[in-house]
Length: 145
Image 1: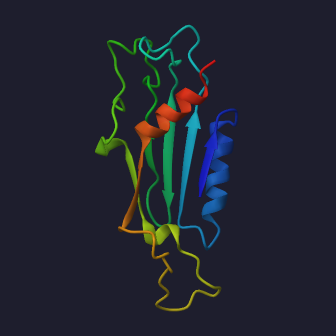
Image 2 (image 1 turned 45 degrees about the vertical axis):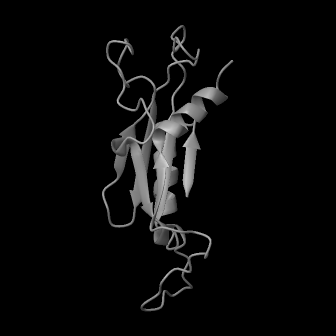
């Protein structure tokens, strides 16, 4: 499950994600919060407005993971001299990895002992990897005036 919020409050987004986690068939929820653009602050090469973005991964039985992945740090006023960490693709620190078996978890109820998810044959590998830099770029491009 994935929830993306632009206008929605952080609290409302968190409550929505936690409500999804109470469903027995949901093993993972990703939330992405895209804050409002910083007015009069744009990337010099692209013209994209600077925006703070946060992703969270909720998984059954695990602590919530969090990434700040915008093109400006959350409390920074100077993205040039205080650059964000998520500034290129394929950075391991800014990738969300979810086991494929978690995505296709859809057992009957009650869950039978030894249940294993049915993964479609055209899905290969053991993990889905979401590159937050790619998400950042798509979000910034979509919000360009």
